Length: 214
Image (cartoon, rainbow, N blue to C red):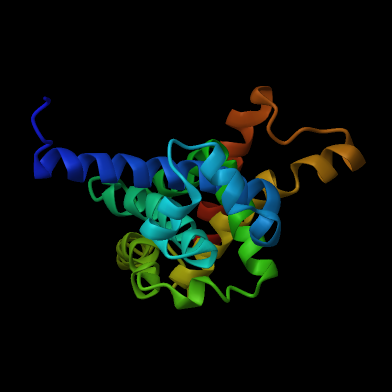
């Protein structure tokens, strides 16, 4: 008879199962929206059951919220880990903008989830226990960069960190969220690899150009 699993092994199994459910659920909700997604389908595509999903998350709404929290936490973790204190303010801003550009391009499901949650007027996200902590990583490092730039007399004095965050996000989100309609109308794929470097640099130029327009 095989020896019983240790508590640590059981915990690892639970964490792997939970992570597997969240990975599949992310794709399901991103593809079909909150209303169209089915827990039965998520269970069928994982190594678990619908009953086990309810055990881990409580229900469809709680699972969807966990997917949202996981998606937001990923970009916030990257933002909080970005080390740009040694860079000049302009270059630091370019690095921060490039981080958002790269993340959004690599995680199109995140863009779709954000769009879906906006359709629902953020009613699920407002219930999140981590909501209060979502703003700090996004604005903390950005605020410090702006402070350094203003202190050096290189950035405009009225620069608002939230405005800069919005400027960066709007460019990156538009590029992903409107890719297909933009291509249908203008015959240009904004995700064309040949234009990637151009758009990445263009974003940095936009942000730095606005801040240095004294």
